[in-house]
Length: 388
Image 1: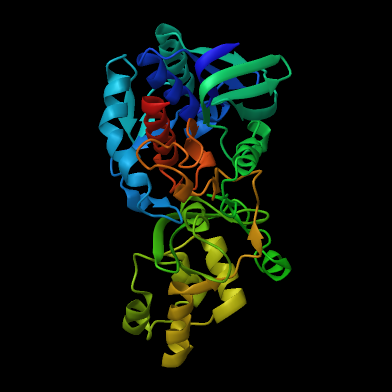
Image 2 (image 1 turned 45 degrees about the horizontal axis):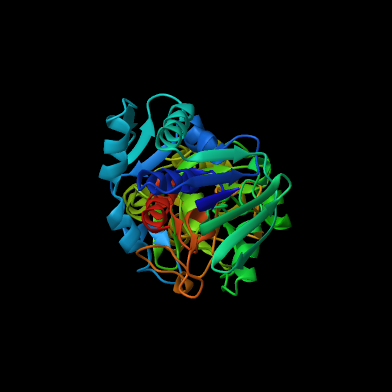
């Protein structure tokens, strides 16, 4: 089968690219190895797709080249995806911090994308396993288990390694390497941290407990819930920090809204037990364990000033050293990818392989939690679709 544009991958980036290219009158075929397109889109946002963030900027993305996302993001903004949905009657809500979620189900968004592909003449073929790709006489060939495809341009939108149960593979990275493109180091991101053996013993029995906290790693700080699991720590603040974590300690402020040192000084004459005192500001189960492990529990009046200062420092600056992460199985995204120095930031086309484009998670651009990664898929897919 021959076409103008062959898109490998029918997720968010691949579908947006297909729509944009087909609108230009290009004949488009998108190949998807799964039985259904957009499985990660369907699962996103708890089934309601956190599809963008109104506060989006390039600062919300991690890349070896921090400036790379700016062009694509400027070419397709949150206002553009909002207008796209509103004009077609798909409703959504702002859940705070600029995060937009569908009012209905993720299926509504997928139906819209698939309908746009159909209306503009872009064909989507599912259950198609790619066996090999090549370029001959200026055209790309893709061999599959259902025949060969031939195209002027090829867009790789295969996603990353996260969520293997949804069909993640390393195909995109293999294609990049085949054409001589550098792939930056890959790792799971937006993923829970794991405890080492000692921490597992210390915090056993706290699984399911959640508390508000602040997390700092390097120059990045995040606020939000921290959730104790049977393996380690999860929750929004932890997932955000994991995007930047490459080893070493993470500082956790267990009482980010309270000056506990000042409160200790003010109340140090009281006879209230430390565990009861802290239980007024954090979950009691955690307060009891914290006192058991770190500060002991006796009436406040029996603590010396240095002891209270150490207790306050520990509560505001608990240094947790993850043993690792839960890996790609629970990661929301893959950090790293096709080196952006290999691509045009305006078109997503490879500099040394004309007609070859990369879009979405397969590229070394990874967003924070909160709708940024789906928006990168829209923006990069749209950029590739305008030029493929």
